[in-house]
Image 1 (cartoon, rainbow, N blue to C red):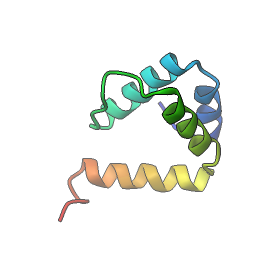
Image 2 (cartoon, one colour):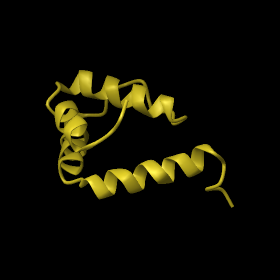
Image 3 (cartoon, rainbow, N blue to C red):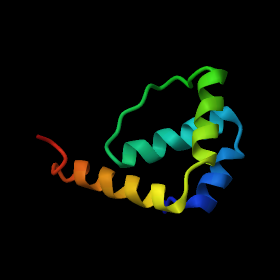
Image 4 (cartoon, rainbow, N blue to C red):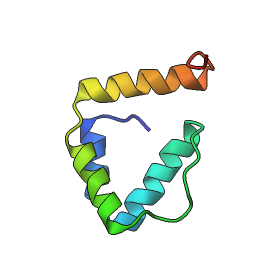
Length: 76
């Protein structure tokens, strides 16, 4: 899945349970493990707020950072 501003806007419109499922799937494909249970409503609201403030530049930078860590270049 390509992550861009439009995708994040679509994801943030999902109900909390579906949003957490999608976040978990995206994270697992990047090698990141998240808890199985959905965070509380306050945490999910904070997540939605943070996602809504991301720019395409932020998304691009985060993607590059995750790629480096996935390749093992981000350690030590």
